Length: 412
Picture 1 (cartoon, rainbow, N blue to C red):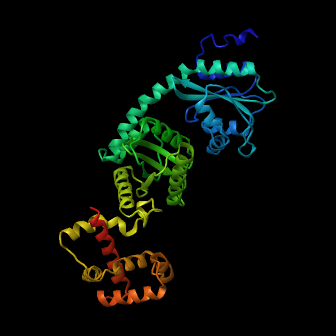
Picture 2 (tube, rainbow, N blue to C red):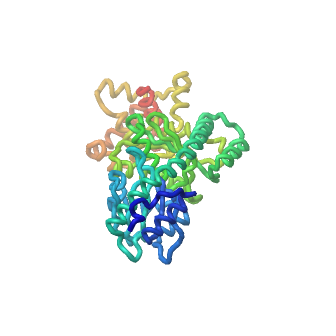
Picture 3 (cartoon, helix red, strand yellow):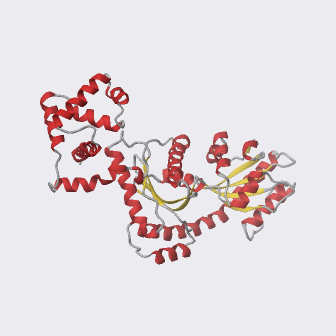
């Protein structure tokens, strides 16, 4: 077969024509993807194609469930390590037939993939060599796509920072910019911030970008990085339970960073969900507030991600400012603090934990590692010393907030 010696000598007008040529040589359907599994070319339809390929062509991206399965099976990790073709066994649960795939490399970086679907024949060793040659020949055309994409991304990044810092003040101006840069519109959105333990390196940024570009749990409108932070403008896909959707996406992102790239300790927060783009800066500041409070109160709000779910913690900066201006004090707290200091007791902590556990005696006693009777005695002493009614919700809430605020002030 002489065409195997140099099957890609000629010029190809497009990657589609290139995909068709590979398909003719191998007698099987071909798809070409970028590094984030977005479809950039595919060969003309044959008599047979599996459901995974059909879904990829329709949505112009590989379905997330297929990507997850390929990670679990080990196919994608192998493709990110090797320049050799990788045989991929069928995964019937996600509609994936048997395939052979090869990575497209630029120096030491994978910039795309070629997938050959084995329909009525198994690719031979000679076919595998042809796929390797195809990957080398595809490099320049895929790079051209990347160059055009990078120029657009620079303009998009500048736009996003203008929005995050409040430098675009009218809805009309923002919508016009979105339309010009082909950024999809969304009826609802929120700003999400992922904070990493160390500054984000180029390698980690590639891994983050991969996860964000392949997710289909939310609609990703814009994203950028800032030292340790990854900042997203995200739209929930459902109008019914948007908070739950964002919550699930955040947990999924952190889990995949851990499982696939061995990166732990990602802190997360998102701002309120808004309908007007002029609120992007506000949502961003709220997301930062969530992260700030999680740092100050790691145990109490470790499972909270959204600003709307912060409750009383939303107001701490405002309350602290008022307190420092001498506008209010809480005599009940002052008395309890003085008693604890004099008698080396833990009445303030006891009340705080009691309220943390929704006034549940058994759960509080367990958390404090004391007998319920001991807790009842302490609560009685708290009421006497603080001269307050523990059945009065207003008094209890006020004391609880002031205890938390005192801790917050001590951390500043």
